[in-house]
Image (cartoon, rainbow, N blue to C red; front, side, top):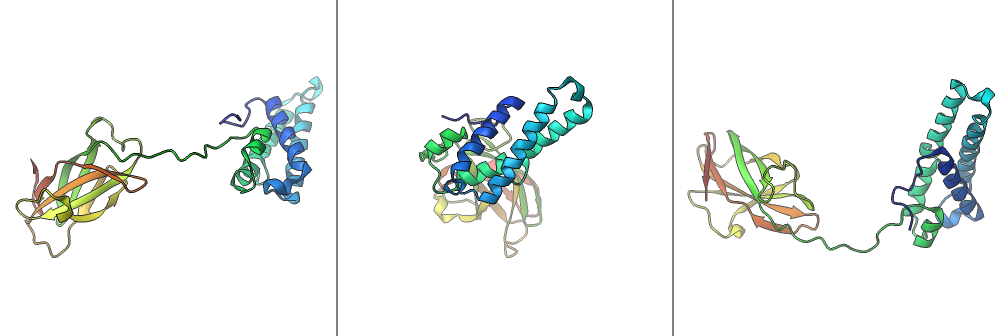
Length: 233
């Protein structure tokens, strides 16, 4: 299997890698989704880099300008519009590319298996930060790792639910879905029809990339236009 970090580090290994790629593509570049024009340009980049490396083998041409020329040629070989990275991106995206072809080119072999993504198993810890008119500011931490500022692994964001009233129902289907947030520090704005000083409740649940949600946080409440309360439902 190809190395996941397919680009070699040393100049000689990089040249060997590029030469191998050049030879394989030269048989028929279109099989890999590469045009003849792109291959010709790539061939020039490989030749320029090889020449720059060869120049540095001569003690009379090991001065700074030749070293810089070799570095520039290496950079172009890798990152030019017809360089290694660009061609590999094309090859990887081309429908006809097989893992055998990837292996022969010594590029990354992608995992084609669909790895199951489980629903989040933990809940957010929701903390209200302040209120500005009808906007309530909050931040979230994960119950299982409260010192971590970011989202848990596998979590895309959090669904924010709200309720207006003295006591919220236990069934979250009776709450109002506001939106999914992707940041752990965010805010929710209640409709302008919600009167000032109304008691409002906020709860959150982590959600993964498939839209599956985990358990809901403990609900927190405050009064719009007033101070924040740390009371929980």
